[in-house]
Length: 212
Image (cartoon, rainbow, N blue to C red):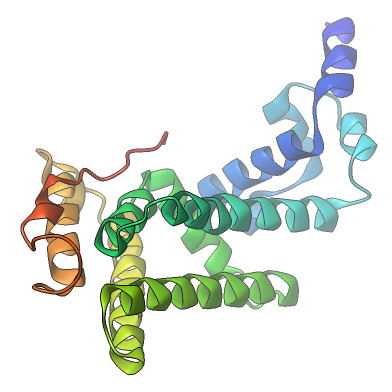
């Protein structure tokens, strides 16, 4: 057993620890992130942690940055590969409405936003998401102010959906209702009779179900 833990200590990366910290946050909030529980989650000794991080704050910082990359930067990069503006917005909605775990994680991080380090990242992520959504709506053909309105409407609806999935999971999880709901969102959150595709097409898009 000792040999296995030594081997794990040498093969685990800083991202593995950051990912474990994100899992702990999704399960129990920021206060659930502590060195010993993370070590048990990864099946290694506590000493392994200090190969990569000086203290708990350092792994929290790395975890929040990893979350921002995965849930904002990576989604934007995927969307940028879609040339048609309407389809690009559909892609964003599809990827953003992912697993319940990611929703719980966002709300756990947002709940800790009074922490200056976390609050700064939340603000930066929100600004980047809104700016990119606004750019997408502008490319769809909307005037600058209208594009900002639609982007704000879409993002606030997304945040409300995260809250509902946490507060009453059954409201969106039964009999394929969540898929139908996301289709409806896409239809409502993209202006009709504008852009590069017919208004009925969003109904063909399925929400991205990432691992819980």
